[in-house]
Image (cartoon, rainbow, N blue to C red; front, side, top):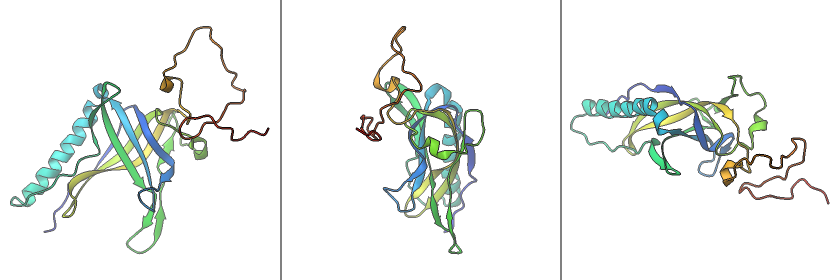
Length: 212
């Protein structure tokens, strides 16, 4: 039976904290073509509208499939969005991804990257400057919520990453807040021109880039 899915929905999150952003270089551990991805973590009180839109889309999708095949049982695929508690605070998380490359029906290869904007809404031209983007960066995520159904997988909603606005950038090595440090009045202040110690992916200082 050829079942039809309801139309997709284009959404943009409110300001959110990014978790494990992979927006410059795709993640290739789980698929050779790679995926760009990001999880937007939104305070629960700010996420009511977008959470309702996603929940309604999923409910309407399941109702549409059931109306087309009343006697058929459907398996629901766990959505990549939902409420959870993070660091003791209620949040709504939305995980989006975009395939980095592939092949179309005519056998032609294609590639794609998420569109990036800065805090003022201008397109980011120097993408390499964001290579060290880290969890804790804040911004907004634009994505398409696309209903799908397959006999093998079931019925679900795919969240396809489209674009990202970066408002407050956190780079690898973390911020003072991420280590539990707070500003102390009258404390020592590092010069912006002073050489900084590079950090590896775990936040550990390395001697890379220094000659002795």
